[in-house]
Length: 470
Image (cartoon, rainbow, N blue to C red):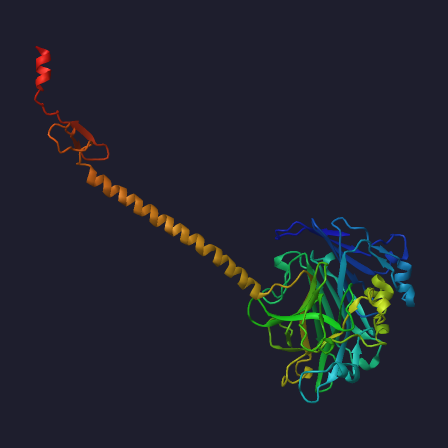
């Protein structure tokens, strides 16, 4: 077990990498390499657990992302069942109590197909009927665990061998990185990911044998612990990246939308949102076709999602989701069982653009995506927040300007009044001759005004005062 500090990140959580969790050092699970990896992200209000396969996986690669309490229970693994790879014994060999919700991806296969019309597109039915090779469970994966040597959470799965001699293997690499801070994010400005919430995945296909008009189409199985009804699908959206360079595609795993042919005529297209912490898969709509980072790019075509066809489950029956969910990962359609079935769909993407010379032109393609808790940030959301900020700031600025102008006006008005009144008498002058006269002062200007009183004039004495004096 290794705990990593979050250097360079203003966050309140830590990462822990556990290899072969719940394995007794004296048992067979402790020998012959890593069987299972658990990456734990501890936060004040929750914990996230990323389950990754070990080395020598005899099944398609997969990722399971679980949400638990801030102080979660331990992950329990029955390694006898987990390592047996024997039918239903493998099911439920991993137990995580008090999980709030969970999501994930199965990297089901890498389809090689012939694009005769150079459309750079393929239909769901063609995926099942025309893929010459389905590079999946027949691949032999080896794990490079960089978290042991480079102090970063980076796990590289490489397949250079296949049990099928007809595959014409070159090299397929699935690179999984769990960034701990902003400095470790990939494709900043394009893919959206908050450190501590999710991971990057990167698929590279290098020098795999295809025909002259062959293309590569990875097949993903995104899933949610909550079911997806036969009449529904995950909600999707396309947003502009923060850099504005290209759109990115989002698959919202905690939202459901009724399929068009199941909706009543004239009905409103409603989105059903689940009450759990949401999650999403996001990927770039372009792919790189040269090993150099930032080199030439081609388009990515998203094939419409479909339910997993019957009979396909046996191809990924020893992937991690079956160890976690057991029979619930089987796609059931009866009303009594549908409520406990894990929601799963098949998502194929074709890598390349029309007229690019097909895969054989470069013999290389690389494509990136994100699996994360939360919801992806939208550029229009950022714009809305900016408008709200401006709407709040403008009235405040206007009030400050009015107050300043009012204060300036009052100040100068008082100054002018003082200048006018400096030579006026302190007491008002009366028109009657018998009234008391004002007392006048002569002042010397300056900050400190010195005033001299002028003697009062002598008034004639009244007759009655004279008589009294006698």
